[in-house]
Structure formats: C-alpha cells, structure tokens
Image (cartoon, rainbow, N blue to C red; front, side):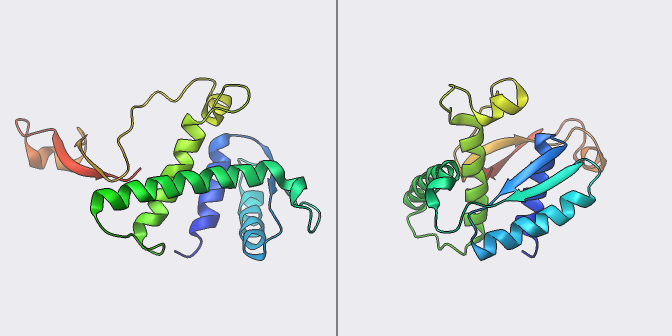
Length: 171
C-alpha cells in the first residue's frame, strides 16, 4: 500500500517513453504530495531527463478543464463497472476492498485503450501508433488462461498435461 500511487505514476510515465515530462495536478494536498514524490523518483531515473510540475491558478477550476473531464470520465467508467460487478456477485463491494484498486486500474486501462478523443484516436493509438489489438474479458469474469511453456513449472506438469487453467480476470 505504501507508495503504490507513486509507483503507478512512475511506471506509467516511463511506459510513455518521453524523456521530458510535466506532471499536472489540481492543487489538492494529497495529489500534490503524490506528484512531488513521483517527481523525486523520476528525476533520479535515467529514462527521464527532465521532469517538472505545473499547477493551475488557485480557485480556477476552468484552467484545469481537460483534467476534470478525464477524472469525470474515469469516475463514470468506475461506477458502471462497479455496478456491473456488484450485480453479478449479488452483493456490495466496499470502496476499501482490494478489488476496488484493481477495478480503478482496469477502468483507466479501458479509458486509455478504448475511448477515442476528438481526433478519433485513443491515447493508446497516440502513444503506440496503432490500435490496442487484444481482446479483453470483463472484469472478474471467469476465463481460461495459458500456463507458461517455460521454467520449472513446465517440467513438473509434464508434456501431456493441460496447458490452460481457469482463473478470474482482474485486468
């Protein structure tokens, strides 16, 4: 739990592959703390040459419009996916449950890979230059997954055992 948000920001920033980054926040104390901790890690990193921060003017939410829209979109996706999950489970999922963190990350991935912007392209397309090509299962859906064909587990299974097992997709 400690440092999870910072680790995610650093991982995602490095994934983008830019050598110069500007992290923006909405001036909320907790977000600014995550932003500054992330910048400390990024500035030490060899992959990022320049990392800086930018904040909107105090009490001017209009100056942070694109971020507000992105947050609203993510919240809507989360509410929809959480309602679907609760309907399938037949019970309520509290916000502090472990699946909530996985569901937030899954929703962010869906927004980045599936939701097109004004230019008709998803953020994934803009970064990778191609559409996201994988088929996805629904969150917490039972599905088959392929076991590794290498490593010590392969020898223990033998060469005539099943290569697939059932599992629950969480992102």
